[in-house]
Image 1 (cartoon, rainbow, N blue to C red):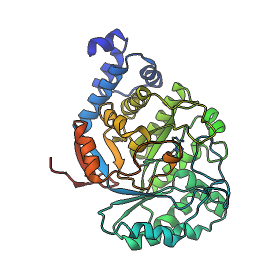
Image 2: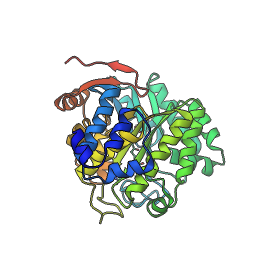
Image 3: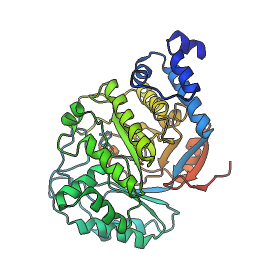
Image 4: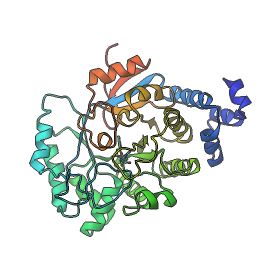
Length: 367
Ligand code: V47
């Protein structure tokens, strides 16, 4: 493999990875551009195995969405409805959401992952009641709720600072932030695909504030639409820079664009090789982020299995009630049981480890 990488002119990058030296912007672009796709995967896999061996993490989680009413108009979104009363718009009451968790009483869930639209009419108390209610139904559960975009919206909409919003939500039970809403930070792209929600700087600043308060967060990147490879690398390096500053990021999740039922439906979905390479380059550039997650809902189960040999060490979780990707054309199942995820990981030749949101080991399934 070294010879192939040498023939592709990548020896300097191989040497740097071996010496654990940080890769530059130009080297990131070269990793995306080189035809030596297998070599890039091999290099990322070595890095993945150096950090985690064959271990592959997953959690037992539940995805909840309380409302898809959203005043933002992201071109890639198939989930949101602009106003209450439009076809397909829905907003659950707090009790309806709590019932969805109560219905899982027998399941050893460790996390609720909730993301919502930017609803212009709900009071802030709705979100506080959701968090308090979820914690009262399942006191031990970890609440990974609201993207940085939602936090910025709450601050602007309810006349608070980002810090106040985070502190109030935290007092009501919020434990960490999911990584959604990052899309692509580069203003050229963001202005086109999600012009009316918070910009990349504010997204990063909300994460910085959350980290300062002692909360952990994840970050994502939506790839495979109108962004250039250089804009992907720029995005990754902004993630790396924040992590240098705070150390509060747990996982990075590349999210493959799904083109159905949205305003970008004329674009093709990214190729499987692009998905694998994007996970690989993320692993190699994000030398200070512990985990690269292949979100099986976004990649497909089969490609997520392959990504476990291209830099990824985490598959997210059981998920159970996903809508964002299924409304955008995902044909994966909407849920996997823990037994199924374990099987998916073992069939890929890796070793499943059930973790909680903070990567504490919950269970090492018997082989
Ligand atoms: O923010 C929306 C993306 C995200 C489409 O933090 C789309 O552990 C592709 O962030 N095609 C939500 N992507 C999902 C998310 C996530 C998922 C799993 C784990 C974690 C975590 C976070 O989904 C949105 C947006 O970037 N998205 N529409 C689409 N058509």
